[in-house]
Amino acid sequence: MQAISVKKARYIDRTAQKKYGISSKILMENAGLRTADLALEIIKSKKKKKNICVICGKGNNAGDGFVTARHLINAGTTVTILLLDKASVFSQDALYNYNILRKLKAKIIFLGHRDIVKNCRDTIKKSSLIIDAVFGIGFKGKLDNHFQSLFQTINVSKKIILAVDVPSGLNADDGLIDQVCINADYTLTFGAAKKGFYLNQGPRACGKIIVNTITLPNPLLI
Image 1 (spheres, rainbow, N blue to C red):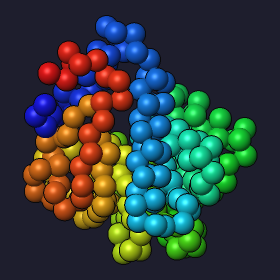
Image 2: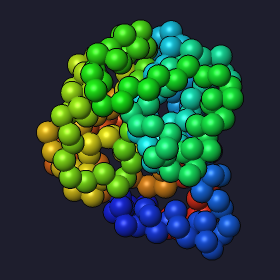
Image 3: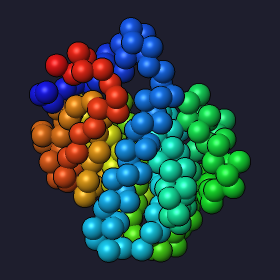
């Protein structure tokens, strides 16, 4: 399948749910499970310690990150979840999976937007792998100074970076960024690669691109 637009990606997700009855929670569960599997594979291949940091925003991309964290915890990995927003603004599915993590007594640190870099520096330093689940395919526009500082800190950390679906800060349609975006070593994207991965700053930001269908029906991916 050729690289697709954000509009097409949303159509595929929407049709999978409405026509085929595959709920958004199932898609999120599959996305998180595939991300966790890849993270473990990367850690093993690089012979790194199983110490992973998952950085989450507030939308469905964050929900993918929450599911990823749960599967990594169940696999015996040391996981720290860094939150950039309060639970009150999470998407419905993200909140559902966040609450599971709370019941599991997962290590969750709320960063907020004040002193964001200071609050996450120690966690990043101790991590072998950083999972970027901040923004999804819908990101456009400008990053505020807090996000710019955070992304710059991650990029210069020399840690392995795995982006969930799209590197945060990258426009998935045209491959443009505002000031800075996550420069991933790996991008695990769902359904199909996005057009922006191959345009402008996209190739630099995405690293190795890996596509997984997360059980999206084959007719939608033709």
